[in-house]
Length: 229
Image 1 (tube, rainbow, N blue to C red):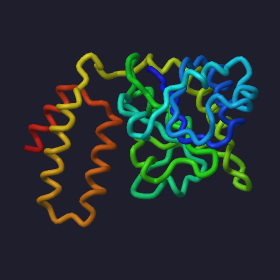
Image 2: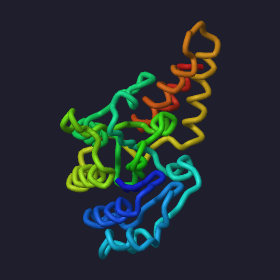
Image 3: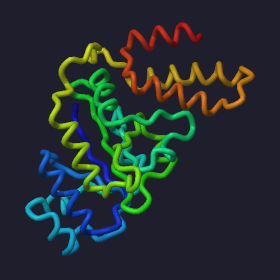
Image 4: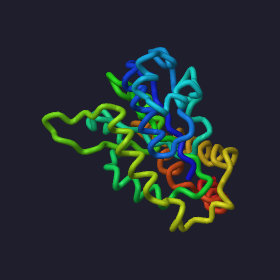
């Protein structure tokens, strides 16, 4: 697994500094930041980052969330409000469940984005919709929302202490490419469009989410395309 840490629109320099420090603690070599709302090279950010301030000054900056995850096969969003994440047929995972699922679908070269939301409002529903999995860290219900740097620390501890590239059962040398996946999605969309289904767009989203997280091989995608046609 190749882990990519994505921070969406950080607002406070102290949090940005702590994020860099935590990321460095767990071996992250680069941060990816979407639309920062604070100065990346600010004094407070550098001060709180300590010896990890280089991760801030060298961070890759993106204009949109979509751009930041474009090169990733698996996108894991995080939330402190599980009710928001659970809208629209989505399953919300506890970290242990996420790791178990990730072991089955990730290979050594699979690029996985770990997405941390805003300091104040987290990830939007639209951004959560773009994630293959959404993770909720269970905390005291009287004060359930973690600081984003704390959430990142927990997630990185779990994800980097486990060698999740071992034990996968699928042959990723024959993984389907984007063109084959789009052919599959179009075949399914055509069937849904011709059926009397009440929530067609929701059904299409669910199918794409299930297929993307399963990381099918070329042979499996071709079999599905043949069946759907």
